Image 1 (cartoon, one colour):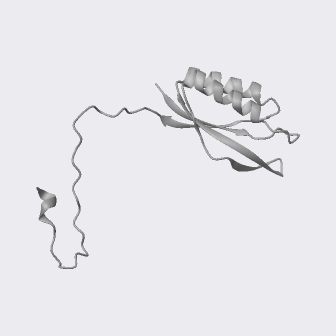
Image 2 (cartoon, one colour):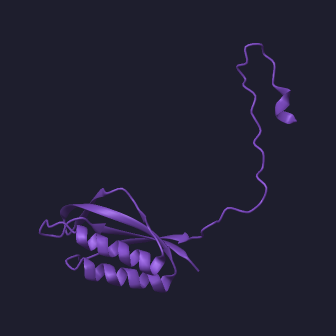
Image 3 (cartoon, rainbow, N blue to C red):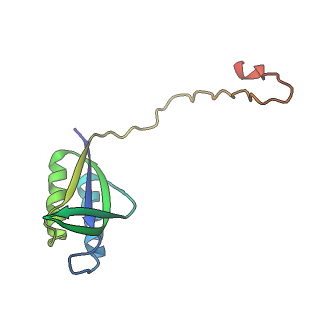
Length: 127
């Protein structure tokens, strides 16, 4: 079964150094093990730990894959982001890719405009 997962990773390490190379490597891992991913807009994460407030620039990825592949992806994330004490992940449920059916398209009906100046409805939408 394919599940939809999310992982949020820091854009900078704890000393402020960019993790762009680690993100490039992570994207390659997601492509290799899952066949693709959706990269969400960069964001700013906030949390409190032991009374101290933390803020961090982050990047989230949504990945559809089976659980064994997800475990490999997360294991690789730990090695690419070694100074992280925790990783935020979410499991969003079952996922599927629907392909366009090879059937005759259904015609679209034109909707009458309720603001017609002459007040009449166009009966041709029903033909």
